[in-house]
Length: 103
Image 1: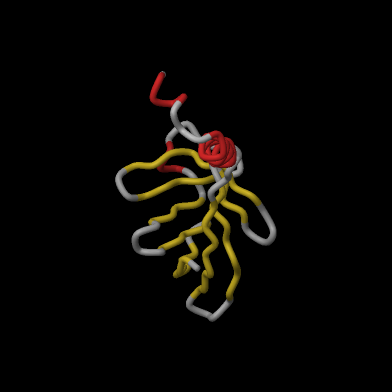
Image 2 (image 1 turned 60 degrees about the vertical axis):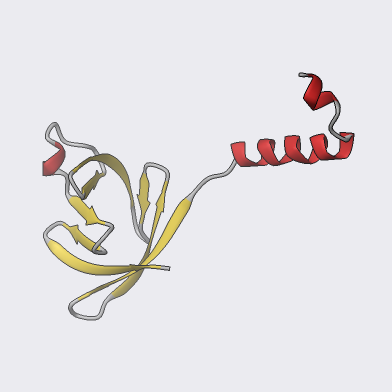
């Protein structure tokens, strides 16, 4: 405690402000996706949601490298209607495949 008292007040204030600003931060990743026919759309992964232009899916879980999303999560995670493999950028929605790239 005594070592903190020796620090200049402005330095302590800057450190405290930095700590507080990190608490409210929300991480998200934007992806650009395309199907084999050339149809393109943007996808945002934000907290436990996958946000598409026309709908938002909820994160249901992950098994290995596959992450599952759905409007309502099924009893078995692998039965979710949306599958995403971030390392490959492979997205499957209702048995239709898309290739995605993180922006």
